[in-house]
Amino acid sequence: MTKEERELRAVQRLKEMKQIEEELYGTGIRVIAGIDEVGRGPLAGPVVAAAVILPQDFNVPGVDDSKKLSEKKREALYEVITEKAISYSIGIVDNYIIDEINILEATRIAMTRAVENLKTRPDYILIDALTLKDVSIPQRGIIKGDSISISIAAASIVAKVTRDRMMRAFHHRFPQYAFDSNKGYGTKAHIEGITSYGPCLLHRRTFLKNFCSNSDE
Image 1 (cartoon, rainbow, N blue to C red):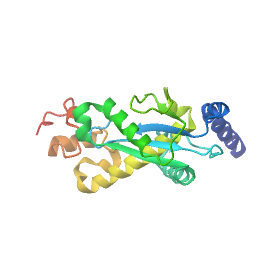
Image 2: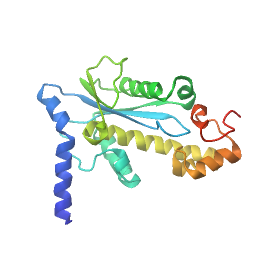
Image 3: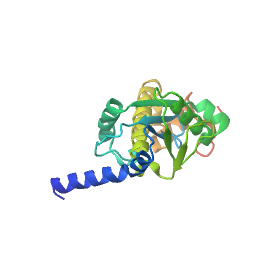
Image 4: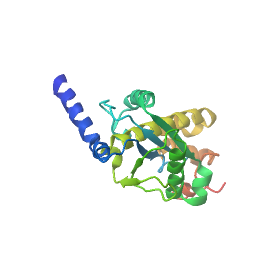
C-alpha cells in the first residue's frame, strides 16, 4: 500500500469514526462526551475510566480502539487528545472496592466519577457497552463503541495510557510482579510472582482464586 493510499484510508476511517457524533450534532446536540474504561480483566490494580469531550472540528486521523494501537501510537494520540479536548477527566476505583462490589459495578462507578469530574457538562454521553443509572445526562451505550465512535475511542486511549502509567509506577514498588510489562494482567511472569511472593496490596483477591492457592495470605 502506498503512502497516499494509507492516508486516504486513514481519512476514510476518521469519517466513519465520527458518524455517530455527526448524527447527534445534526439534532442540535453540541457537547458530546465519550466514556470508556480499561482494567476490567487484570489481577491487580484499579479500573480506570476516562471521559473525553472532543471539539466538533476534531480531525485527527488514527484515533481508534486503544487495543488496536501500539503503545507508541497511544502515547502520541494521548498528547493530541488531551491538548485538543474541550474537557477530559479520569475516574478510578481501586482493587479493594472491586473486591467489595464486583468489577462490573466498580466499572460503572469509575465511569460515573469520570463524568462527574468533567469541567464542562456534556449534553449527551456515549458509553462503551454500558449505561449509567446514576447519571441524568442523556446517554447511549454502544457495543464495541471504542471501534465506531471517535469520542469513545479517545476515552479508551486516555484511560489506557493513564492506567499503564500508573502500573509502571507501581512496578517500582512491587518489581516482583513485572507490572511494567503486564500492567496487572495474568501473564506467566505475573503468576510466577504471585506464586513465589504471594499477593501484594494491589491484587484483587476475588480474581486470584483460580490462579493461585495462596490468594488468602
